[in-house]
Length: 86
Image (cartoon, rainbow, N blue to C red; front, side, top):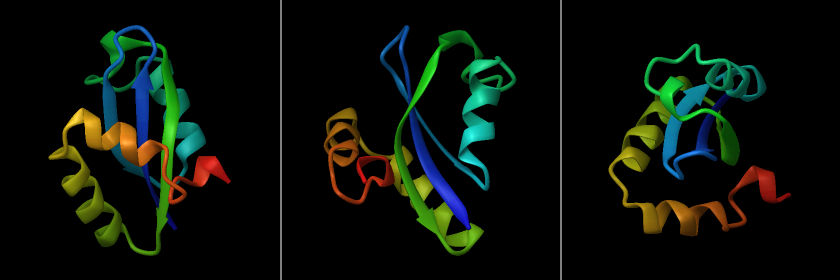
């Protein structure tokens, strides 16, 4: 299984979208500064999670999410499709 995730920077209020097989480990990597793009906005909080059966499906979804505005991302976070809401 592959996860599409959204994390929020607690220091800058920005969102980052990504794909991973292990979202807990990936969040830890972001918070340890091991990701170049997110290392300047630590700490990060996992705010959205959805699961996909294939890596291809997850990457397509991630690409679509990266094109959306913050208003949509914040709306999505509150939806029942967010695995963190269950």
